[in-house]
Image 1 (cartoon, rainbow, N blue to C red):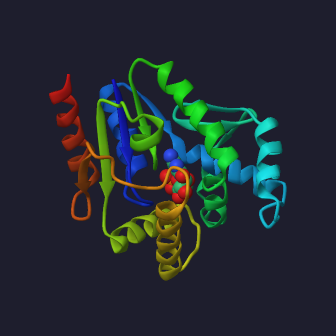
Image 2: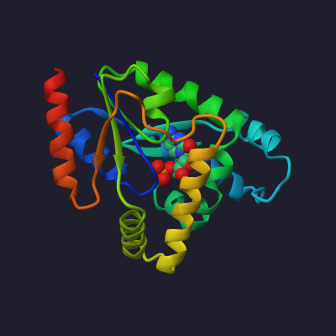
Length: 218
Ligand code: C5P
């Protein structure tokens, strides 16, 4: 079975998908981490302000290998965890997300990974609409902007990353805007997706809810 979880930044998709994958013993594919890893490489090469991004992304794609170990992304053999959650990545990730070459490359990688696993949870924007429109379970997980910003802020504080709350909110708003308006794979609700609003719910409630939806499909 393929379960796809879509939705805006900070809705809790990663946390929910990770928990659900443990409960169901399914493989977990964090597609956002793939865009983040490519952005990490872009910044590492100090090319984030370059004008010719498509060509740069082409070169990056030709020289990297992406993999997953225990749900964490591996870039050229290096496991990336905290590095790809840094606000600097949040700031520049829309460059990778709106690049045609990056999206095509990641789409094919994601489909390969999905078809190679009998049971998988794909999480990220466009997983229900573009990557796996045939997924048996499609979830659109959302929450209010204020709540999403609050969660992301708390997460960053826990990681000792110092940032102002209003700045986090502004960044999420900006990412929503760019995710919804980009030409390829924009953020939108798939026709047959179940919409779950987690504004006043905790992780356990959301995981229980999806777990029961999966149970109904089995
Ligand atoms: O989910 P996460 O916040 O880690 O995703 C980082 C960024 O990657 C998103 O803001 C979005 O622009 C992009 N992304 C995407 N398509 C996906 C997953 C993530 O465009 N399937």
